[in-house]
Length: 254
Image 1 (cartoon, rainbow, N blue to C red):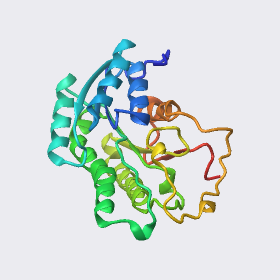
Image 2: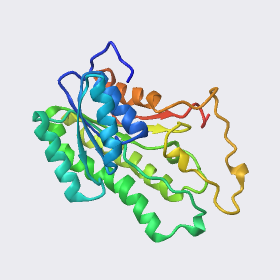
Image 3: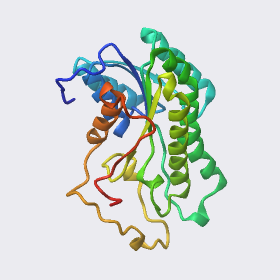
């Protein structure tokens, strides 16, 4: 785990969903490296244990709580457990999500419902349940969208819709709760080397020319580069940011 001189999260409690791998793990590591006590959430208990081990090996503080963010009872239990750690919650990073690729005509209603339930409804449930704690602490939320929410993306209609919904949800919360002391912002990754990207495949009969965008930068980068953006936005360095949507995609949409 990379070390940082700054300790922007000393004395703070951060809850990171999707912390079992990828951007979620990297964000949890970064917040812990900067002094946060991090509550790690995922449905992947083995992944959570590995993230906790990495953080602990570098003298960070982390606790794990497996829960499904799309299940209201699980979310209530997760927030109660988080509040019990140090009596407060200061940062909520909603990173848990799933991705499927399919021709539009082949998307089943079950698949559509699943992706929206985990990605969008899960983010809604986490924000709604955490809000009383964040209002008390003057904390903030960083949600995860995608560049698929900001421009046309083939074979990801359900995923793109769920991520666009997260943008709209987040900007609504930013207006409703900003003056009450809770900031809400969005990070929109793209072209990042993560396990979820490894799920990509071309559906049958796909026109590969539809993926014609060229990334402006020299190469894809790993999740640590996205984690640094989460940490900036969630810290006091991002104190004047509310309702922002930050693209981190190597210039793919330029």
